Length: 257
Ligand code: IPD
Image (cartoon, rainbow, N blue to C red):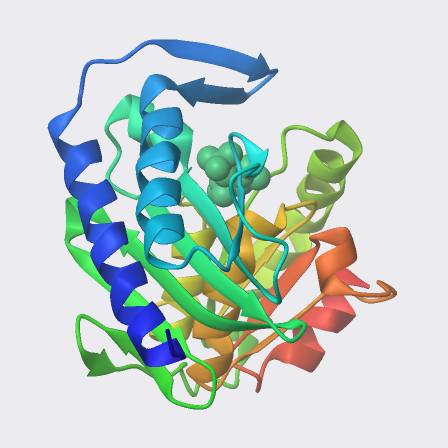
């Protein structure tokens, strides 16, 4: 199956999973760790996505948030990277910014990214070299160049207390210099907000690849930049994400460095 067909498959599978999440509002919740929850729906949605992708693409591997590397996936050159619900706390509380995030990686790069926000009916996608889209229309990052006009998204990584403290220590200076800050609770959705110009930047420490793989490509294909934080060896290794409209990247690097 070529990449264009895989993109169509991923969009359809995301929509199926999104419909499942919208229809299932009664579920058990388990605490994985402090501030870290999982529901029956996270697991069921991952199974649904894995089965649909691997039955259509048996030569691919599959890595998901809830079950890790799929035993029934191949060890070929391509791999699906999936977060069935990015923003599980939002899903539990019925706050509409949770997403289904599906990325496809091959040849050492993310080739496709699909992020669906079911309650808002927003389907973002990108294909490497082809562009980024929201509900079929091309999207671009903002052209804001003055930090005083910029709105940035951010996330706290509650799993690692030092990371949460680091973010909190940066906030006073950022609040006083930026136009405003937001915390929506889904890193995949935050990245899509940078890609379509709602946000001018987004930053968080210690994300997992499944949280940001699809959004990473969507931002880049919309003309933005996604890197690790200053001093990081690589974004994929640390999960410390800085995404901007590219113009503001040096300013944010200075603030976070
Ligand atoms: C979480 C969301 C949240 C971010 C957390 C992630 P999950 O993903 O992306 O915005 O702040 O660090 O873990 O756990 O709901 O898939």
